[in-house]
Image (cartoon, rainbow, N blue to C red; front, side, top):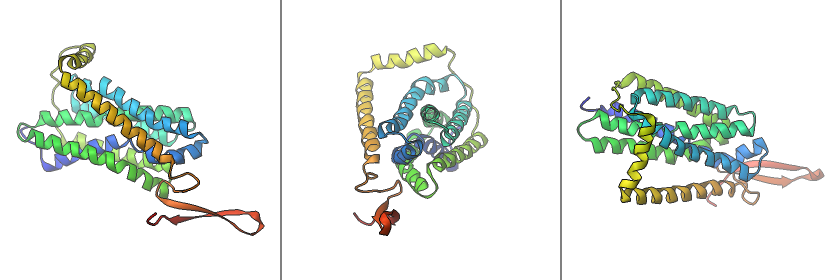
Length: 267
């Protein structure tokens, strides 16, 4: 294929953004999850940590497989795994299941990193422009994820964040399989050899090592900031919900305590 249509580029960008957003959905709703499972903030924070760890595992162990098998097929497998993981989290009966589902969400969310090289291999002209557009979709997914999960949690409950996301992943999976051609794999080596060649690149390129280290530190700092910040607005002093409501407690006659949810305005 010499080029991709605008619709195809949009589908790839949307698929990548929807996939990577799953890693960040949990961050603004950790307090709601902690309240339901009656766990501490430290245990709730592990949910986001496990998603990040899973994403790193998927990047190293799954994205290189795109050089061994047809990328369209690999994307389908990852999306099916992601849908199952999202449903596992949404219907988690206990904390262990929730932890396992969060880890798997991170692992299978690397769909985005398989789509990027797929797009590059499908075009001959304007390759940088098209890859940039798809990467923009990834960034939009990361930025919108927190707003989306907070909004849905405020209106429906945190489980619906993952149920709606599973439906969106299913929709993009159908579009990807229906609208894109299959391309034969070109790598003829073994999986172990593929992983070894990936590690070898770190030894070959000093710039790659510095960039990877800088990215790791920046990414870790950003994640630590957002996960910690999640619990601060929902402390008793502020009483803000995931959606930005203020929950006000007040006492009435008889010693009973009541509450009301009001909109947070400007403070």
